[in-house]
Image 1: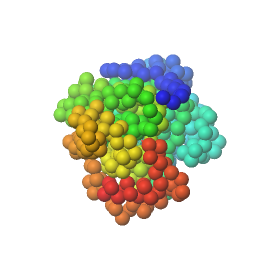
Image 2: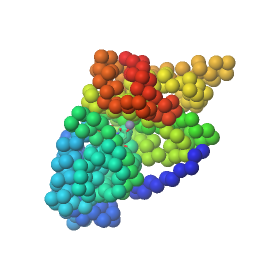
Image 3: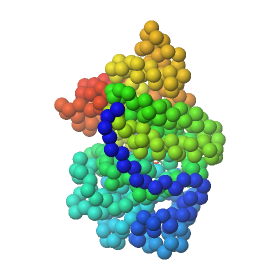
Image 4: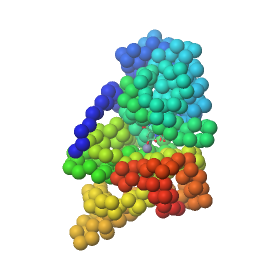
Length: 388
Ligand code: NZQ
Ligand code: ZN
């Protein structure tokens, strides 16, 4: 196992009706003037936004609001949010929604205390300061409620890029599984796919002797595989929603990724797809992950065989572990299909003739990406071709 530091200070408030305690927690974490940030209307229609405002009023906390975040959140609204924060002297940002809302809130938190362009942080500038962000999560998927990351698409060129820092971990996150019962089946399945991908980006590693994190990863994957069909069959299954909600958090706050090299190529390949076609991130991952797996499998066929046996219950073929490894990838694809996810370009609406454009925005040049296998631009092109 490699040396590591792990700092994950988010305070989690989990369970039924916990959003009614928002005001108390904003106060506890020092918020005096709050920007409530939300998406394109689901939290208005569900009445959640009103409950949150009531809770803030009861705690005598001042607030202003900015809605309108779209999936694959854009830079334009971030600039608007930064301006509001500066004019209104906002000192705390409350994201009410899914990963896109939380990521947009994190971007505003960066820009609000910076004189330059917030986009600098998405071009690699080190984060030194940000307003505190808290979240009320309505969609289990991106893990942004506990993660260091924020992913924004710049409208100039539709470049989708990430910023990362411990300072971007929310100070608190309210996780009420009931809030996720209104999710359409497709969003639920995209979420499950994203959670699994967060685990698999960590699972496929060259680091040896990482039994604890291997087993944590396998446990999370098994949970998602067992619970997702239950919520698709019965969207109001509270316990299954609750298990998925916590799985989404532990899949990406890095507790199962510490001490080991992580890969992240499939995510980078996917970000170009959702940047170009504006498809759901989870759906893009369902297409890119199997293609990546097939391309890199022979780098460590035993690790892929372990994945097949421990996660998918495949029989180990000791004579030819490659057969077992392939079966695991097949099982993954079958599971994706069973929950309604695409696994090929055409099902996603992506086109083979756009591969040069995807490679161009990936902008790898002569660099490589990933760590399980270091991919060149040519490798990436071949992986996109395998996904067609
Ligand atoms: O905007 P509203 O009206 O709220 O509707 C949303 C949106 O249309 C809807 N929704 C959310 N909660 C709902 C609901 N509909 C009904 N009932 C509810 N309870 O769902 C749609 C999708 O929401 P979005 O926030 O875009 O989805 P998700 O949480 O999957 O976030 C995706 C974004 O997160 C990024 C992705 O790239 C993508 O941009 N990621 C962020 C990461 C991070 N910050 O650590 C890591 C991930 O790998 C990922 O890249
Ligand atoms: Zn993801």
